[in-house]
Length: 319
Image (tube, rainbow, N blue to C red; front, top):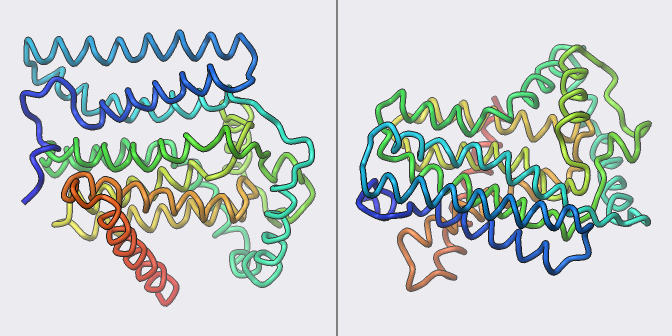
């Protein structure tokens, strides 16, 4: 039986909205405490206050005058907040001129890519590299697409559970950006471990990243965290449709591979992003079912999620 915490009811704020307000407060606290430019600090404080007030206003209005249309809007707003939180974390620019972490991560990537990883991807020519670039470009729509699947299967009442799992994994990732200042390998090491093939899809991804991405941190990978958090959230919210869920896990795996092969992220970023998706799912499950035994619940669920992910990867590798 699903916990009533995630069902639509007569509560002022949904769990995912509490999570958003908590993140806004966290970011505002960091802005005050960390040595960032005054313009960035003031912008964060002003915009977070405005966004928080808007969320509260929508919640109060919906509470006093319940509307199915406004309730649907509240299902979708968290998906938009992912982009807002991502862009905001880019304002915490605290560069490390030594690039110590990136040097370590680059060494790991040399070993991985030089021991058959890149060769396996390029063994069929440009086809699979192009597919990876296409997968990478879809990461921005994966969470809303998964939510749309819930609507398609008429399981909208589970949107709150799905959104909470996704936002928890993604926001745990974004919350760490200010503490891991780092540059992507495509910019910091533009001639190292490059793919042998290019395509129009790769050029599109470079254009998107050049105009809309942040360059203050790449660890953990928000792309990987969002893709796997959406897949895990859909598995938890839509367990009766396993085939659809497998496609989302397959897509998330392609995105994770593309981040490393395309030099958008280091392998360390992708692994950490995957871990954040697992931790977010474990925390969500623990908060939902074991509030009195939170630490033990987190550890147990992390193990379950990790075993599922490992088993899926093995099945994928074996075909």
